[in-house]
Image 1 (cartoon, helix red, strand yellow):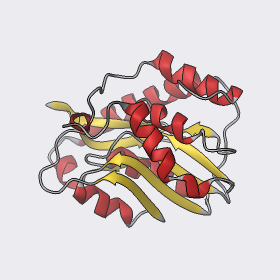
Image 2 (tube, one colour):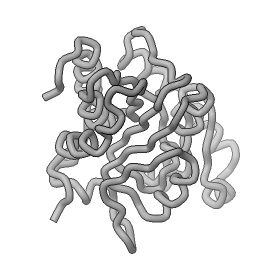
Image 3 (cartoon, helix red, strand yellow):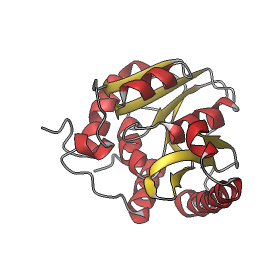
Image 4 (cartoon, helix red, strand yellow):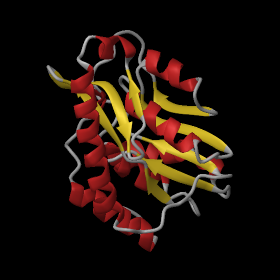
Length: 216
């Protein structure tokens, strides 16, 4: 039986778990695309705006869904050392550059030149729809840490146990609604509905956030 009906359901539950930050200076940083659906729900907590962190997965050449690394919109790269050693540096460099260019495209498309919400001095709440290898989130944490937030909170509905243990050491607080023990299935296996999120849906949710409208 799935833990969550869909990303909206997971986002509502995550928002309830983060209510202690109501009234505090905080920003929700969602990872597109899937994380934006959850982030929009978390951003319904009063006075907590929604922003994005653009991080792109670098997939293995023989299994693109399996992350061997990630690159941020600033060009910072996080790699799985063991996986990266087995691949040509030229391939990794080309793959990272391709994903960096895609992050730039997404920033222009999703944010449409709107002002960013800096994390400096506030609580940075990083949200995604789940953690498997955690490499994209690791890159996101590194990215937001440069802005010197007062506190970094990592919030996800589900996380692989090893990944949760590793990333817990990188943040001030980990909020994970479900950390299954044993072999971790794909993130999507914990949802009844895990359809892909379109660019248009991300744009719609970000637009609602700007207008202060509750997503639905």
